[in-house]
Amino acid sequence: MEEVTSHPTELRKMLDAAIAAQASDLHLTVGVPVIFRVDGKLLAAPHEVVLTGERVTKLVKSVLLPRQ
Image (tube, rainbow, N blue to C red; front, side, top):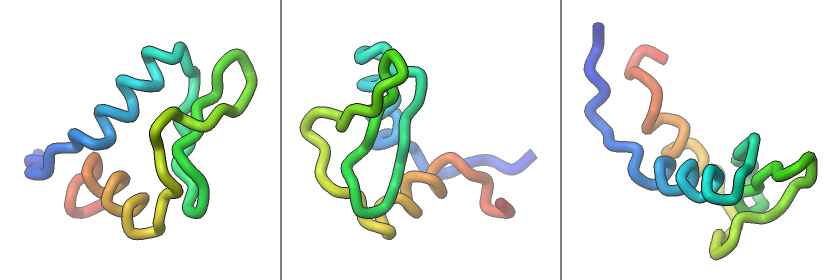
């Protein structure tokens, strides 16, 4: 089993905020802020800026194994 060396702290903070908001989903889309789905409605996460392609890539790669 490969060891994941990066620490996805930024993504963890987003997930913690989604849990606090009672969101069922966390959407990461280039060109818009982080979005939560709460009670079937899409809501912008508070205090989030528009996501860049580079930031989304880093967030996703922070939880993947190197071969993925």
